[in-house]
Image (tube, rainbow, N blue to C red):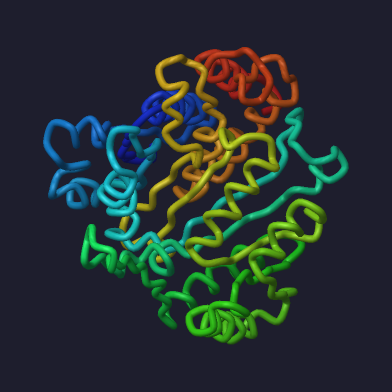
Length: 358
């Protein structure tokens, strides 16, 4: 029997709650599908560790994670700790340390879920956003000088490399080619950012030319936000910079009904080190500990992880179970208009996994 070693990092806020639910569901799908199992190891890294040690994760954290097949990550961020500390010293430390340069975020309207768009528009949502995950505006280059003085200056430098742009565009092309429509939109802002973004356009044009079966178009990021709202059916696969795709993917999840549904894979396509999978909803400290966090984002994320681990039938089985629960509409958390708890949604999905025709 195949065994997959998973590092489970709940992190902050509702992260531990939804990751615990996700691990329960992964064990259930392995039992229902057969042929493989999971070995989970939990790491209590995050803001609680920072308060006691001054570190979000141990100095040898990456070395501890290297031997795992994948990382299942919850959320990071706390009201009493600056966001640039919590993000850079845990989530980004793993993403960049393991060169997980492709952030992949699928979005579609799940059965029974109502988004903010008209019903006819919402049903057209079926997107994959491919976000460059290692450079751009989040490269960490910049600094501050003359702190506290009238001449104080702060600078963040958006870094784009030819190899970085080429490899994320190539990965997006491969994803677009695997989808029925074979349609890719390259999102940029080269009318205003005339150096890095112009190079982005040029390199993407070179890469996409190697995929003649793809329909490729280019669009400015501000126009893309309007298009996702007004004409969602014209969008399929999107590739964009770290900052632009971060914003677009949150818009996508909101249009699909809730940030609590959104799923993400931080992928190293070369599989040199473990990839990390996380729901996109964040820490959500306003509902932490109340037992009402939506676990569906972690379940969709778990499905992406199963696909990455080579368990495609199990991944499909899990998504069918999730869709069966949302389609019924009687066991949903408050963010989706229901009254169910995290545990009740988890139990419902596990029951669907064990049911017939799933």
